[in-house]
Image 1 (tube, one colour):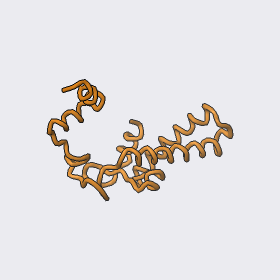
Image 2: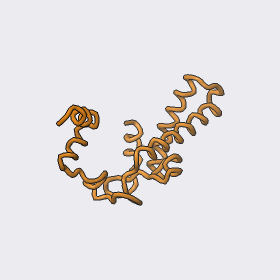
Image 3: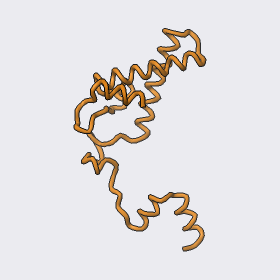
Image 4: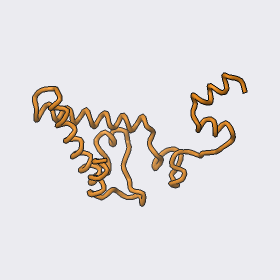
Length: 126
Protein backbone atom coordinates (compact mmCIF):
# COMPACT_ATOMS: atom_id res chain seq x y z
CA UNK A 1 0.00 0.00 0.00
CA UNK A 2 1.46 3.36 -0.96
CA UNK A 3 1.05 6.55 1.03
CA UNK A 4 -1.83 7.86 -1.09
CA UNK A 5 -3.97 4.79 -0.38
CA UNK A 6 -3.19 4.95 3.34
CA UNK A 7 -4.04 8.65 3.47
CA UNK A 8 -7.20 8.12 1.41
CA UNK A 9 -8.47 5.38 3.71
CA UNK A 10 -7.74 7.56 6.74
CA UNK A 11 -9.68 10.50 5.27
CA UNK A 12 -12.59 8.34 4.13
CA UNK A 13 -13.09 6.79 7.54
CA UNK A 14 -13.49 3.26 8.85
CA UNK A 15 -16.72 2.54 6.95
CA UNK A 16 -15.09 3.22 3.57
CA UNK A 17 -12.10 1.08 4.51
CA UNK A 18 -14.41 -1.77 5.58
CA UNK A 19 -16.44 -1.49 2.37
CA UNK A 20 -13.22 -1.58 0.37
CA UNK A 21 -12.33 -4.77 2.23
CA UNK A 22 -15.62 -6.34 1.12
CA UNK A 23 -17.97 -5.74 4.07
CA UNK A 24 -21.60 -5.16 2.99
CA UNK A 25 -23.44 -2.74 5.29
CA UNK A 26 -26.62 -2.71 3.23
CA UNK A 27 -28.71 0.44 2.95
CA UNK A 28 -30.16 2.79 5.54
CA UNK A 29 -33.27 1.30 7.13
CA UNK A 30 -32.60 -2.27 5.99
CA UNK A 31 -32.44 -3.55 9.58
CA UNK A 32 -35.86 -2.00 10.22
CA UNK A 33 -37.34 -3.71 7.18
CA UNK A 34 -37.90 -0.44 5.32
CA UNK A 35 -37.55 -0.05 1.55
CA UNK A 36 -34.38 1.47 0.14
CA UNK A 37 -36.19 4.25 -1.78
CA UNK A 38 -39.66 5.69 -2.14
CA UNK A 39 -42.55 5.80 0.33
CA UNK A 40 -41.70 4.33 3.71
CA UNK A 41 -37.93 4.69 3.32
CA UNK A 42 -35.70 6.68 5.68
CA UNK A 43 -35.43 10.34 4.69
CA UNK A 44 -32.15 11.76 3.46
CA UNK A 45 -30.30 14.27 5.66
CA UNK A 46 -30.79 17.11 3.16
CA UNK A 47 -34.57 16.78 3.28
CA UNK A 48 -34.51 16.66 7.07
CA UNK A 49 -32.37 19.79 7.30
CA UNK A 50 -34.57 21.56 4.76
CA UNK A 51 -37.69 20.73 6.76
CA UNK A 52 -36.04 21.96 9.95
CA UNK A 53 -35.01 25.21 8.22
CA UNK A 54 -38.59 25.79 7.07
CA UNK A 55 -39.95 25.09 10.56
CA UNK A 56 -37.35 27.35 12.20
CA UNK A 57 -38.05 30.13 9.72
CA UNK A 58 -41.79 29.86 10.36
CA UNK A 59 -41.26 29.99 14.13
CA UNK A 60 -38.90 32.98 13.76
CA UNK A 61 -41.50 34.86 11.72
CA UNK A 62 -44.19 34.08 14.31
CA UNK A 63 -41.94 35.19 17.18
CA UNK A 64 -40.93 38.37 15.36
CA UNK A 65 -44.37 39.31 14.10
CA UNK A 66 -46.60 38.37 17.00
CA UNK A 67 -44.50 38.60 20.13
CA UNK A 68 -41.32 40.69 20.11
CA UNK A 69 -41.61 43.08 17.13
CA UNK A 70 -37.79 43.05 16.96
CA UNK A 71 -35.18 40.68 15.64
CA UNK A 72 -32.72 39.80 18.37
CA UNK A 73 -31.93 37.29 21.09
CA UNK A 74 -35.37 37.62 22.66
CA UNK A 75 -37.04 36.85 19.35
CA UNK A 76 -34.89 33.75 18.86
CA UNK A 77 -35.64 32.53 22.40
CA UNK A 78 -39.35 32.84 21.68
CA UNK A 79 -38.83 31.09 18.34
CA UNK A 80 -37.24 28.15 20.17
CA UNK A 81 -40.21 27.88 22.53
CA UNK A 82 -42.65 28.13 19.60
CA UNK A 83 -40.66 25.44 17.75
CA UNK A 84 -40.92 23.11 20.75
CA UNK A 85 -44.68 23.60 21.00
CA UNK A 86 -45.13 23.24 17.24
CA UNK A 87 -43.04 20.05 17.12
CA UNK A 88 -44.90 18.50 20.03
CA UNK A 89 -48.39 19.38 18.81
CA UNK A 90 -48.07 18.78 15.08
CA UNK A 91 -46.06 15.56 15.31
CA UNK A 92 -48.36 14.30 18.07
CA UNK A 93 -51.55 15.03 16.13
CA UNK A 94 -50.84 15.16 12.38
CA UNK A 95 -47.57 13.20 12.32
CA UNK A 96 -45.52 15.95 10.64
CA UNK A 97 -44.55 19.59 10.99
CA UNK A 98 -45.28 22.14 8.23
CA UNK A 99 -41.69 21.80 7.00
CA UNK A 100 -41.92 18.03 6.95
CA UNK A 101 -45.19 18.22 5.02
CA UNK A 102 -43.54 20.55 2.50
CA UNK A 103 -40.72 18.03 1.98
CA UNK A 104 -43.19 15.09 2.07
CA UNK A 105 -41.76 13.59 5.28
CA UNK A 106 -43.57 12.15 8.25
CA UNK A 107 -42.73 10.81 11.68
CA UNK A 108 -43.88 7.28 12.47
CA UNK A 109 -43.38 4.99 15.42
CA UNK A 110 -41.53 1.71 15.10
CA UNK A 111 -44.90 -0.05 14.98
CA UNK A 112 -45.80 2.03 11.93
CA UNK A 113 -48.42 4.36 13.35
CA UNK A 114 -48.41 7.97 14.45
CA UNK A 115 -46.57 8.98 17.63
CA UNK A 116 -48.64 9.56 20.73
CA UNK A 117 -48.65 13.07 22.20
CA UNK A 118 -46.41 12.18 25.19
CA UNK A 119 -43.85 10.58 22.87
CA UNK A 120 -44.00 13.59 20.56
CA UNK A 121 -43.34 15.89 23.54
CA UNK A 122 -40.38 13.74 24.57
CA UNK A 123 -39.09 13.73 20.98
CA UNK A 124 -39.38 17.52 20.79
CA UNK A 125 -37.56 17.92 24.11
CA UNK A 126 -34.71 15.71 22.97
